[in-house]
Image 1 (cartoon, rainbow, N blue to C red):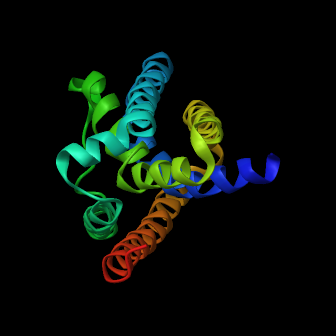
Image 2 (image 1 turned 30 degrees about the vertical axis):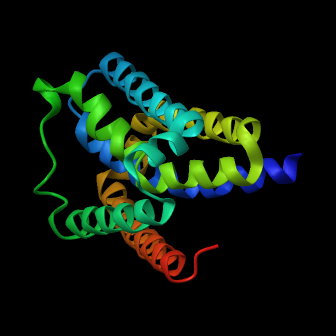
Length: 197
């Protein structure tokens, strides 16, 4: 049971990429009060969890209606993630924005969707459901969401100790890994097209 849980948990942990989302979250919320930041964290993860549940229980039906496959999502999602990671690596400081006027809306987009639950996580949820079933996938998903919530709530305190410079460095490294994940998704999608199961 524990082995199966870890097999479902770890790919989703990598796909959600809390280490990559966290510096962006800190940057977007640095001018908010602690109370407002915590409310935003709950809103962000509520939106992410609702989308994840929709994908888990109705993803295949949605894909059938739209006429798309997992490989389509892998290639399309991989391309989007690749663009996002390259943009963050090159223009990261220019795209940061002041959250004072739109704190409520940014909890859903972009923090909840697509930064927390994006193409990589959607694909991973669908693959996990096919491999391990609904129960284990839901358990792994819930554990990951709680882990992200804990990171969001404790991050501002940690920021005081590690400093902004270290946070920016972590963000860049996370973007590099995100680019690698994107390339892996694109490759897996192309292989899936060429050699369908």
